Length: 113
Length: 111
Image 1 (spheres, chains in turn red, yellow):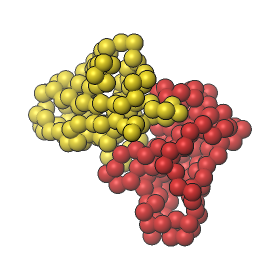
Image 2 (spheres, rainbow over the protein chains, first blue to last red; image 1 turned 90 degrees about the horizontal axis):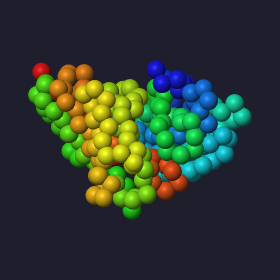
Image 3 (cartoon, each protein chain N blue to C red; image 1 turned 180 degrees about the vertical axis):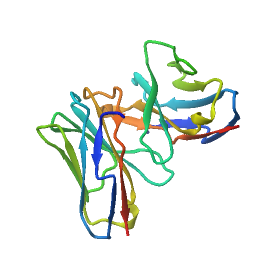
């Protein structure tokens, strides 16, 4: 167990809908990262937050947005969902803003039908 | 562009033999190189990492070597066991400090 929690574990929804994925980092970690992993694919970096502020952006679609709250938990919002958005979404946390050791949560499996 | 190349994409070895996975990176300023193991449907787990001020690090049957001049780093697993079967990802930090992951190596240990 990495200490990073994600909810929900599974999510099934229809095209065009909007969902929110939630992540709580390890106690004391200030950075949260979001990744997308499609079937048999690598980890695509979406976005990073550090102590409430956006720190880095990757290949995140405009339909997706995220935020980090004062208690350091983070939410990833996915809207106007398409079939191709079906994937595993991981968040990871690390103590500082740099690319030091990142600890991954168990992931949320999103299925868009 | 900034990327991390990982080879091979698949690797099968006999139980007890060694496995080696290699990565190259493009950003010469990269200074931290982790390796993650991901079992099917599970989260990536950090198994070992190395910083640029050392050339090798070992942890029991796992070792990582780094050649900063050539911008290569490798994962070595000795005395492989069935539970080593998984997908392994290397990573390196690029600009904006974000980790860029390799495309993964599916390692299969043949009993």
